[in-house]
Image (cartoon, rainbow, N blue to C red; front, side, top):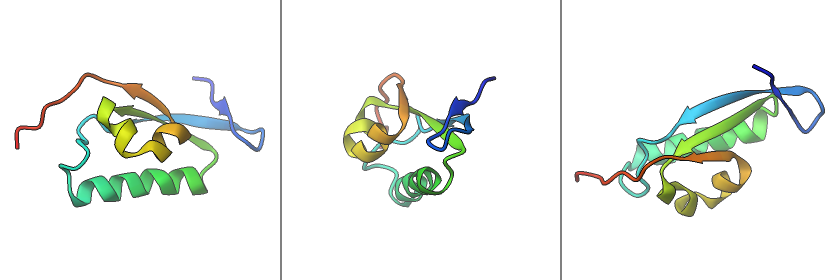
Length: 81
């Protein structure tokens, strides 16, 4: 695996973050804490490049993360609740 270049020129470690379980507006506190953790990672760890595996609705609900990270869109999920 070859790390991607980070803003400082050093190589960043690419990490896939599986957020396919996250249905915007359904998760409650888990949605907020998870997205806050990804934001903190982006702010404080330029040596890690998160790649987010998300549902299509994620990009609309969390546009800042969708524009700040590479997002891999997975199939749509219909919540059962």
